[in-house]
Length: 255
Ligand code: 13P
Image 1 (cartoon, protein in one colour):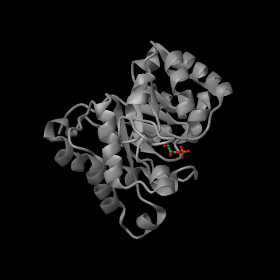
Image 2 (cartoon, rainbow, N blue to C red):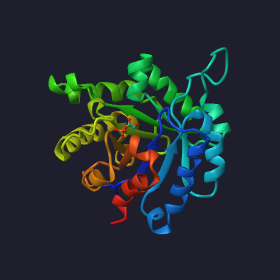
Image 3 (tube, helix red, strand yellow):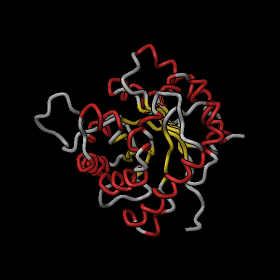
């Protein structure tokens, strides 16, 4: 497993934030993605679905990827209010988040539903960013590693490769709270994810899949978190809504 670490990705998840006026944030991010930064780190923004089309147009030719925040497992049909992976791809998206803890928590998504969504992403040619992570109660009960192993095994579909799968480890208790695990806690969990990937993507691909850390990543803690072994980038919520903060996080790779 002594392969070179994968090229890092810093991805922003805007959640249910962003009106047309916030397109200025993307303009600023595009301007700040200078060649020296671009040579070291990939960037992506997952805005609300209402802005995906506009953002793909704005980001065309920039190497900043645009993604959705969720997709339905089916390609089309009578599913009012839902969006398919094909629709996101049709708008120019290249990524989609699946199984974010807010989807699991507020929409009751299970691991097998998340796997079906990730499979839909692959069918449509999108990279699935599969999110996993333990709750505060699970961490306090010492179940973190078991939870992460179970979620990963249940949420990653057959046919996953380093080209169509990214894993995001986001401890639920760290999301939007300002709390983060210690670097050694992150290292422990990411090592378990890396080890578990062997059975899911095969030994050859195991070391190539990007594993992102998410949960209260800010410019002030990014350098420490991004330096942890097996952390191949970040999934950023709140700080991705402010161009200077998002770029400040990406700059952890520029030092
Ligand atoms: P925060 O960065 O706001 O903690 O959110 C993390 C997250 O949920 C990204 O998907």
